[in-house]
Length: 477
Ligand code: ADP
Ligand code: MG
Ligand code: ZN
Image (cartoon, rainbow, N blue to C red; front, side, top):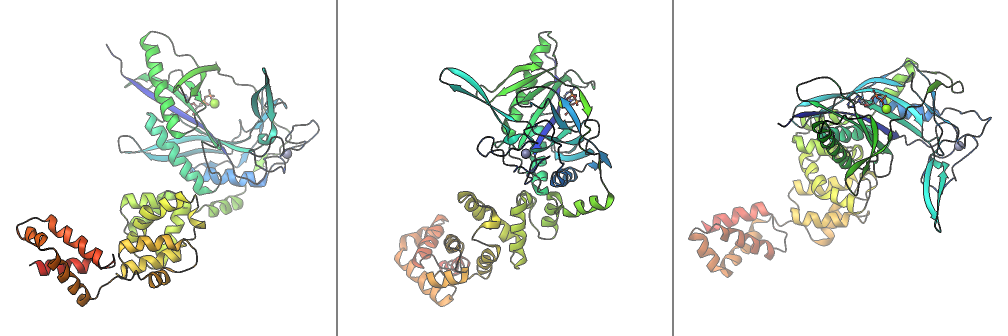
């Protein structure tokens, strides 16, 4: 008899804030620099030095919380999370436990079943990162090195309620979370770079019941896809346990990206947490909070609606154009030059996106500025060039100097829309290809495509395709 289980999933997500400095000192927030360059007595945790809380960290953390619809708490405070480990020689980590910065947030995903599903965020708190351990060999001797560049780097930890019910919903939640946070400007949220780190809490229960069973915590995934795979693995592992009559025990497991399995790491560890006396209570004033709210840009869901309602984009086009803040600002700027929004969206998704990717550039830094792209699109709309030539012009627009108009003039791309000229051209093509004409009259529709191709070729690729087809159809009778 097979039992049907329902997974219960909650996520804890650490996000590195992209501040200039660390959280409690003025060292640069660049953990990737040469080891131990970005350090000072405060972040080396020397005795006798007091932390000085960074205003920028509070601002970025608040923006992140607002982007996730959280209630910012009037008062929040730091605690000392006590444990000793070589990556934490101070003996405690400054983290908010009793009084987190924010509570009661949410994100609404479109679930696996196609319906909207609101995932609650329990709380978001600030904390400092710990040092990084590097394990190496000196000859045959293993050595462990400590890099303090990361010690004191500003983080927020986002804790969801156990509201997720499938690996794919967890992945969708993370994609949405990443988009919201990137929009807020507080982090680049790269799991590959380690600026977003996800712990997945997973338990299972017989479908139809609503108690929570013992969970297992899984760490060490370096992509959203791996989070999904690790959760799926963990669900089936727990189901096997239960079917074999073994209890699921609370512990922490590591995802192995090569073997694609989780393996036990340690018993779950929670050190004591005591209020920290060195960082003052953080008191948020209404006026300051209003300033923070006004610093959030128009968020993706709103942008998506506007692109559908005001610009007439299809839902898919609107989703794509609003998925990334820089891209959507680029798109908006192109449209402001009075070109058709749908034409702009189609060109940006089919032509510009691959180009940005190929040259590894931000839309904002591309030599194909919104104004220059708009110039090209306007010529397409006025039927001054056809799509083929336009793609050639786009390549040349990357030189960063000439406008689309200049390129078209210089390279002779201007579309032939003179009826007389096209008339003569079609006559010639029909005369030169009598068998195709005959086939067409016998009912072979393909022959039309062949003749069109010949005529386009004869025009050097510059014929106005719409006119050409009109004339061709008329002449073929
Ligand atoms: P802990 O204090 O052990 O870390 P919390 O109650 O703070 O546990 O929850 C941590 C994370 O685990 C949260 O994201 C929460 O949603 C999730 N979680 C709690 N209980 C369960 C459960 N039974 N199954 C799956 N996830 C759970
Ligand atoms: Mg926890
Ligand atoms: Zn420092």
